[in-house]
Image (tube, rainbow, N blue to C red; front, side, top):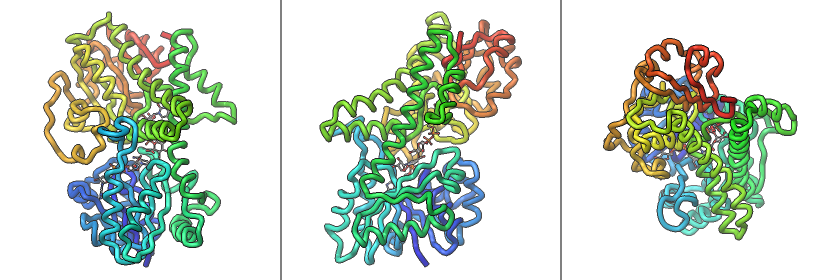
Length: 469
Ligand code: NAD
Ligand code: UGA
């Protein structure tokens, strides 16, 4: 029986391994993590992450060929294939702070593998890492190898949160990069055999290591670039009377462009787009390519511009001050169908409004008060460093309240900001919300989920991203 161990039981490690276990009954999969709380949650009925379809997959395999454990050493030692799926956040200090990837967690995982292994291993980079990381990892592993043969593969993950299970069941492609040596090719084949249990052969792409590592950064940069492009156009739409939804539809009908990822928004969020582009920018700079670096930097700058443009619009519309006014925030997660708040645009918007002395009342169907308070108390880039994965009691921002009910959040408010595109926000009783708000009542739709004309008929003053005022 092939044994797989995955180091890192997070948003990627958990769902990815659960699907491998489901699709490959003859493989034993063990997911390990240094966070005892996370492992306990994976072993309970309350999984540590919310992801549609995940519960069912875990229930089907856990205890059969899928296990979660904190015994990192034991399961590394027993594994044939080791996936490393630890966090690779942006560095907060020292050389490259605010740009480069922090590989501390990756390096500690590699050192653990080198320390405890007693047999040959295939080590798979699942985390998103800077191009050439495999070279560094190889050095760490082989320096102390006790005659053990390690083959490093790059197998970046392309799943998106909220659709992780769907994406894993039916991926556009699986990418495997390895050394161009006979041993490297053999390792690629071994990993290919795992995916071939459910992924059609023509969707499994094999490349050299550096192409695989760079393809992941490039794919995220291209996706984020589309959002910044449409967001830049949304500003122009507002200035000219064009409608960004109509423009995006017309542009996306060109089969060379395609319709996906052209939804204008308050800005993209999530744990990866910003960090991966910053990482790409840093790598370009380090390779003496400042023009390429500046090109990609602009994607982040437009995203920051879009978030601050939204805050400025709210304050300007509400007579240039929100001081002491209650503003309801509908949606705090970085997108619908997830409870993840990492780099959510809601953090910047809330901080902007608090900076103008607003009182904020937040409702999100999947995000807890504790999480929101933690996010608002944290410095930029600090969120993905493990100390923040541990429970702690931050000093609560007293101008912020969190409720479990959209009507409660909006009661007595002067304005409502929609910051996540949860489906339920489309069908709220807006007449009831209007009746319970201060007048004039404003709605600022950062996700284009409501019909502005219908809300105007109720009496709201409506601002939607990229739409005529
Ligand atoms: P995460 O923070 O949810 O999970 C990482 C886990 O690794 C944490 O539970 C942490 O405790 C654990 N960990 C850290 N160091 C460890 C060590 N030495 N030993 C054992 N466990 C350790 O992160 P994530 O969202 O799953 O992302 C993981 C990687 O995958 C990142 O590089 C990310 O860029 C990439 N990625 C993420 C997504 C996504 O949707 N979240 C998608 C594709 C790729
Ligand atoms: C993204 C990529 O889509 C995945 O392929 C990749 O594996 C992953 O990053 C990663 O490397 O972490 P994810 O961040 O989970 O996945 O979610 P997306 O659906 O890409 O959305 C990212 C952000 O962009 C969200 O805030 C979303 O609301 C926003 N977005 C997305 C828009 O504003 N407009 C769009 O048209 C699409």
